Image 1 (cartoon, helix red, strand yellow):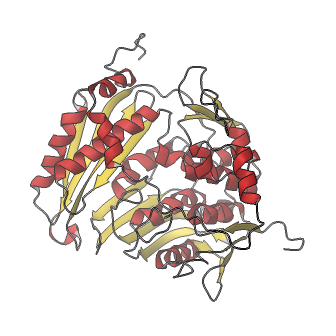
Image 2 (cartoon, helix red, strand yellow):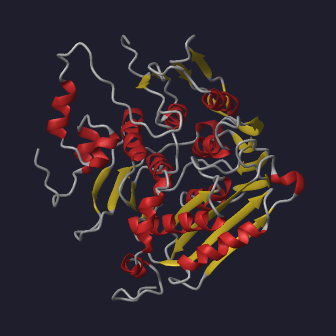
Image 3 (cartoon, chains in turn brown, red):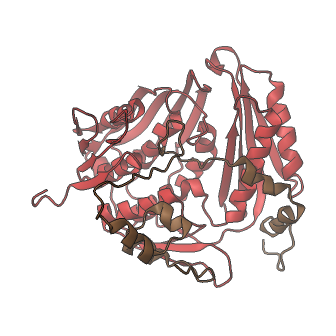
Length: 98
Length: 363
């Protein structure tokens, strides 16, 4: 159950070599723990877990991510706004490459 | 199930579009079952059926079987013919829903595609026609498609009633170029389109002003265009939206978009779009999140050489797409951190399948 936060994800292994759902991979679930949990089929009845994000209560096949108004509020923060200055040509991030 | 390993098999209603695209491109039949089989309203939705019809029309010889309950489909792909086609999109999804998969197929048709779609031109779920025109099509240019590639927005149509119309022109290619795009560069300009239909035209100016209040601090080269459609051309419902894109010195494009919703002022919509653009820029990479699958698909179809592209963290869609691509074309990507620093950027590389547009040579 320990998650090593500092260690980077091994994307090749996660995508091609695990049974994790894409959502689990993004969340950073552990391949071992979650796969054993889901393979437990001793119970006759299993509770279906549904990822709900659409208005009709189902996951919608959509291209644009849902805009999270609350999360985007973080951009009111001056420090964060300044932190990406280096990604623009006008920002000074060490070397001035053309 | 016995012996016929060439039939691709998937479950669930999700990722339907790219699975159908992969089937048609690879020529492998695809069977998709358990389509909302546990839903109280099981089976395909009207827009999914509409998409199947559209795919049937741009191809020749495609056989689509839908089970009685609508929870399973079998598609045996024919050849992509293209040509001149008009399609009415149901108002349950926007034109972008239909156009996105078509863009993946159109370059490989027999004749250049001239497609007219009618329906909703911008909504909050799929790429608006503005983003497709200004961001998606330039991504195809990376692979050698540029001449006569065009999207014309003839009429706008906001939800819920739509009434918009677009024309998409796509040339055919023999083969797509290998991509080598590893330098994200730095943002040199920001462009945007604000449109407002059947509401005060002042709304688009208000969006532009609010967006500038966030973006002006970064670069002076910002041009936000106020796009006005009047009368017949403005569709059947009121609405407005702001689409933004940031272009880097190496041609990397990041984009964002927000559309009007009840009880939100134009300023709020503009702030959402502007902040979403900043989030997108922060994620890095040479290709925007929303265009990961398109670029990765074209890399798989590229000539028999190693294609490379630097991307931000893959989205859920991208992860499933990568798995489905491997099932379909047998191609897997090498994915390594782009540099040793703490950034989240990844370097995707694969060996192109050398896909040749066989439909074209028949002409």
